Structure formats: structure tokens, C-alpha cells
Length: 303
Ligand code: PMM
Image 1 (cartoon, protein in one colour):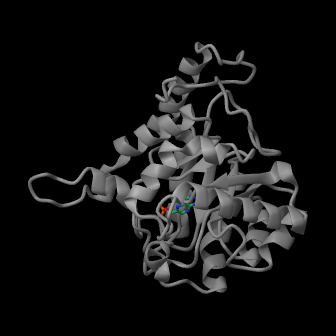
Image 2 (spheres, protein in one colour; image 1 turned 135 degrees about the vertical axis):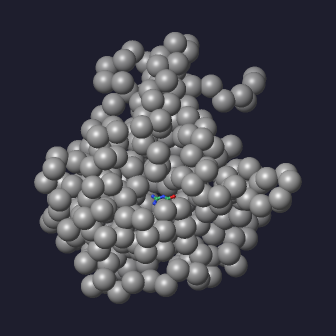
């Protein structure tokens, strides 16, 4: 049988509790309130600008806005908890008050707790509960979905940890351990979302293997989030043949869209991107196409 990618369904089969349900992959728009993120470093650092940026992504059709106050790029210095709270809380509060579905991108239980109080409806923890021992107990009672990403440590030592015999098997095994830890701590199963963690302790070839074998991650039985947005493995792929320079981050959106479409066609639940408007169009096409395949499900939810 051919292993070619083809849209297998009209809608992601799995769906975390309490979040909007659509007949397509959801689109999470990125709102970084940081001075130093690799992809948009400093552009939205001021909370007022971050809110305005979030609202424009919401108008473009984002299903979720992911507000983060800590850059995870290699070598980034961690802000204090106070500084992280100062960055994210006003932005979460205002976007939630405006009616947006807001997610908080944090590894700290305290920040997650305060953000949920301020209206966040999803906690996105790139450390999968490993960075802060308070996170899983918090998520056991927070009543909102929780993204568990594959992670092997803070950004300072990330490259040295990008060592695998078989990256997909190891990421799946390590995610399974995080699921067990979360369930053991009391996090409800229907709140758990998984993420292979593209670029986190992964070399480009590791990211491509994870994408090419995404069904092994979805087979864990939880909704899957894919975050490829403008990451350096795309920049490396699109290296200029004349100058030998990688494609700069702000010119990686078309490549990101291609990843989003292919991930959606492989039943990803959500894609995390900067370029919301064209990604929404792209995942709607993917879902519509999938309705016509033999495995397509009747369309019960909006497209
Ligand atoms: N990547 C970044 C930040 N947060 N969260 C999840 N769940 N998955 C990711 O891949 C992810 C993330 C780093 O990218 P950014 O600096 O553009 O936010």
C-alpha cells in the first residue's frame, strides 16, 4: 500500500475538553510578549502592542491565541516569574475580555494559575510538566486543557541533548511517560494535548522524521499540536543556493503553511503559527478535501 500523505478525515477525531470544535485543524496564533523570540523578537514586547497584535490575529480567524512571555530560543536567558507575569497577565486578561480563546505559553505553575484566573482556557507547557514540579498538580484541578510538549531541558543545553537512535520512537516513549505522570497527578485524560516539540532538542533531520511519522504521535490517543512556525529547520531547507544563507525567519511562512496542511491531513488537532489568515484558509481546504476520501467522515461541525 502507498504511504503517500492524503487527507484521511474531514475532522480531527480527538478534541480536548471545553475548546471550540471544528471540522478542521484549529489554528493557534502566536502572541509573543518577549524582547528576544527568534521569529518576531521584540515586535510585540509592549503589552499594548501585544494586545493589538492578538486582536488582529483573532480578526484574521485564529481559533486560539497563545500568549507567551518567555523566549525558548537556544541560549535565551529566562525572565523571573515576576517579569513573566508582568508581561503576560495584562495581555491574557484583555484578549480574554475581548472574547478570544486564550492559551498561556508557560513552564511555570504560578504563571499558569494566574493566567487561568485572568481568563486563559488552555495551558501550553513546552516542558510537559518537567520544568516546574507544581505544574501537574495545578493542572489536575485547573479545569482547562494542558499541552504536554516533548522537552529535554532548558534552551541553554538543548543542542547537546539532540541525540537519538530513533527520534520518533524516543519522542513517543518520552511523551508516553509524561502522559502517565500527568494522569497519575490527576490531570483528566480529556484535557491532555501532545506536541512533538519541533526544534526543542531536535536537529533538522529529527524534525523532518517526526513530521513524516506524525501518525505514530497521534496514535498515542490524544489531540496533537504541531508548532513548526518559522523554525530554523525550515530556514535550513530553504537555504539560498547562491549565498549559502538560511532563509530568514520572516520569509518562512509559506513553508510553515505547507507543514500545517500536511500536519492537518495527518489528523493534527491544531497548528501553532504566526500567519493566521492564510493558515485558516489552508486547513479549511485540507478538511474539505478530506471529506471526499473513502475514510472521510460526514461533516458534523463547522468548517
Ligand atoms: N514553539 C515555541 C514556543 N512555544 N509551544 C508549543 N506547544 N509547541 C511549539 O512548537 C512551541 C511552543 C517556539 O517558537 P516561538 O518563539 O515562535 O514562539
